[in-house]
Image (cartoon, rainbow, N blue to C red; front, side, top):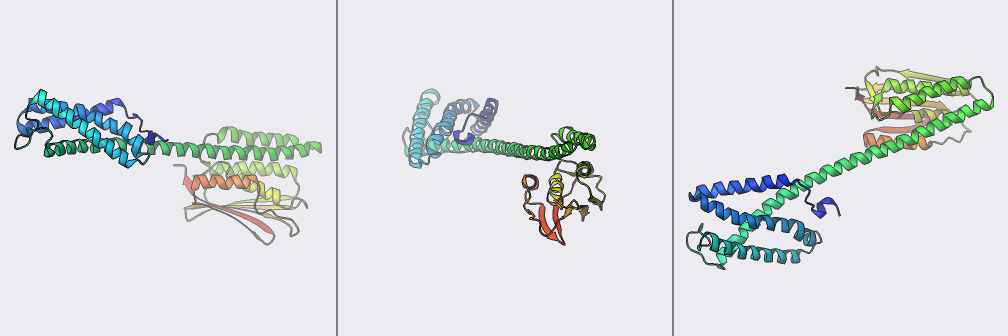
Length: 350
């Protein structure tokens, strides 16, 4: 069962005291002024509220969970009627012996116990208090539950997003370490440069973007360019062009959101013939959309995997979590170029 199904006593005790205290004071002053008899009003309300309060909590914490939430409505109705009849007996007896033999002085004539009008009037009064107090309590409980669910959804979102980010980072560094291993087998003098650049990349991931939802786009571009430099150390005749067609100084983006697209270009480009061309275009459309496009060449005989690997899959999942459906990630081919185009809403640093 959820918290609202259990109807736990989860509202602070002082709030219950404030509610009943305020309600008692209002009734006391109201009927005292109406009859110009404050002592009678005090004694009458003292008896009534000593019965109102147990009935309300008995209904909320016993009858409702046991019968209403289990859809036993007939049993609930019978139990409530019995409870009201017990309240009537107690209220009438206390009024008769403590306050006045006239059990209903508010009426225009003297009533005797168990007259139908008196029974109906007492039961309607109890139902009124029961409905009002229960409505207040259930409304507050619903609001608390809604806030709790919102908090749970937000935490689940953060956990899932963090999980995807953690998947992307090891995947990227695993690929880079493979590159480094290949160079070491060749006893290449490029190894020290690769290690330094890899260290810079790790510093960015471990410190600069840790725990942040958005980072400056310019830093992401620098990160991508460092990655490109590492790949250039491994592959010769690699031509990479980066075009920034707009001012991106104040734009922020989710960290590491583009790197999988760049990895994919190197992975599925024309590496076999050692003649890879990559173009990266970044621009702002109508001051609303950030357009990131990456193209890489491939040969016709190449078996091009248009779905990409785990990096692209996780990137799409992250985008879905962050932007819901307010983004576009498409791939296509044109003139021996494989094209991935990502469009996301603009976020500014302020």
